[in-house]
Length: 354
Image 1: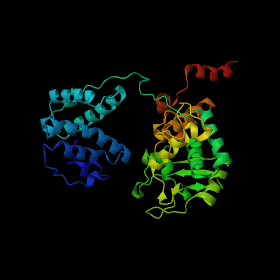
Image 2: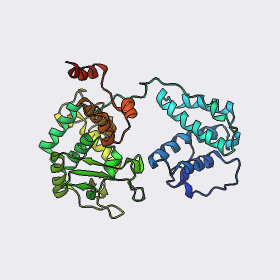
Image 3: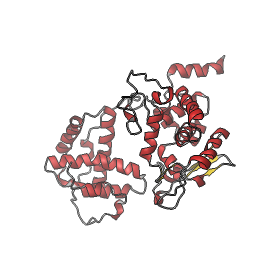
Image 4: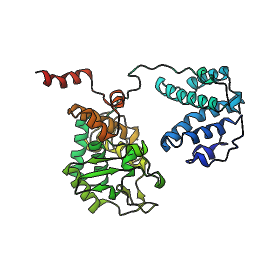
């Protein structure tokens, strides 16, 4: 894609973009910005950015085929786009479904504005996926999490990696929620963490105000947090004068740095000193703070969340309790997070009948 639209691609306030409201046949790019402006009140910034990314492929297709405005789109052209999208980046079925669904919703929105004919969105054929096709099986298992936390207890007690892994595993919170927490959101006496949506100061959470909640902590977690704040936390404020919980020498630790910390912690060689892939640890290209994601055994923060939720369910914690603690609906738990096998579920049910 060319850089002509790069100044618009990462706008965080689409309402602020100056577009003539009387235009009846806007450019693809302007129509996308208008669409995102309409959706902005209901969607998190991360979701808006994801939609912008997916819709930019339509602009890229237009650039390659001399299609500039929305009015030039026809059923045949959208069919060609669908085929182009399928072939161009070697997408798997789940990714293609997600990409095309976003474009279809955008085209349907264009019809409501009179930019295109009413049923044009139906020209985009969404590939069907099976019930389990988009269930990512990667997770951090309970025994692996216990091994990592035991290592931190012994060698990095109350240091930043310990706090990151402890909170992600014990609360199953998203990385964005951990990024958003301030020292003032932690109540040691009540043993609670408050997750708060603060978009005006650059710490939104995924479900915005609907995702705000209070999370109870165990005494051990509080002991770790208390010592971290007292002994190891960098005494920094962020650009808004807030006091982030997880900090670096520069201020609030970024979400990308939080992810790198998790990738590194979940590399077996960091905890056991051994490599299950028979790589030479000293010369391994995945060794180091910024390269951990390349290790076949490393896991992303969302894999920690998936593993933690699965562990909660395996411990017979009611789904409704998991729902409130982890900010996730029962349907999403079933479809995305509960990766227990049928055999594991059967064994768990056994004690109720024996």
